[in-house]
Image 1 (cartoon, helix red, strand yellow):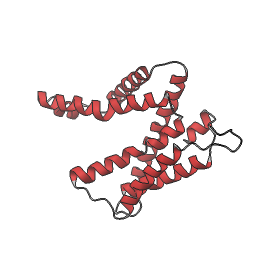
Image 2 (cartoon, rainbow, N blue to C red; image 1 turned 90 degrees about the vertical axis):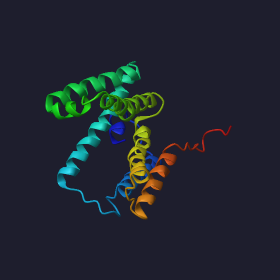
Image 3 (cartoon, rainbow, N blue to C red; image 1 turned 45 degrees about the horizontal axis):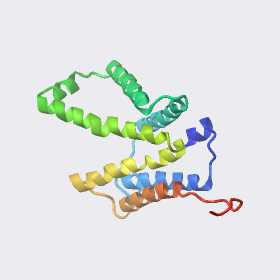
Image 4 (cartoon, rainbow, N blue to C red; image 1 turned 180 degrees about the vertical axis):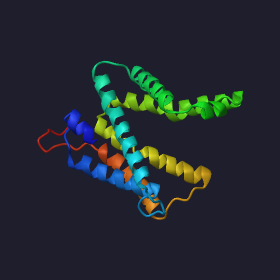
Length: 191
């Protein structure tokens, strides 16, 4: 949202500010940073901050590409192509390749995992950027850690901090609702 304000001159409204605060607070509660037993190390904080900045830049660069006429599928293809090249340069892929190519079933699961958890979400997110502002998309995207936490609780019986975890889920969904409410100014004629 902050990058959108800087790069695209999007206007900061009270509702955007409230939504941003609720989303951050809700994510912190849902993940256990607030009200849970989660502790954050300096390394974890820095990696998380770097991850958040890179993800925010994806929205910014995608918006620039969309505004220049590139299709969402093209943007996503190049995103994954450059990401793969980068990962090959900085990662020892032999252990991962050994697991993925252990048998045909592992290959199938790896492809399914890549499609469902990586490719489709980025394609949908980039398609969504065609229709909504980057700042709005960034708030809506905060549903992702909430869904991951809820799936962890339901499928893997991971504990959700009471009451903060549940309150956090509610705050994130409230932020998504608030960012999508359209208010009419008093000077606009009523329809």
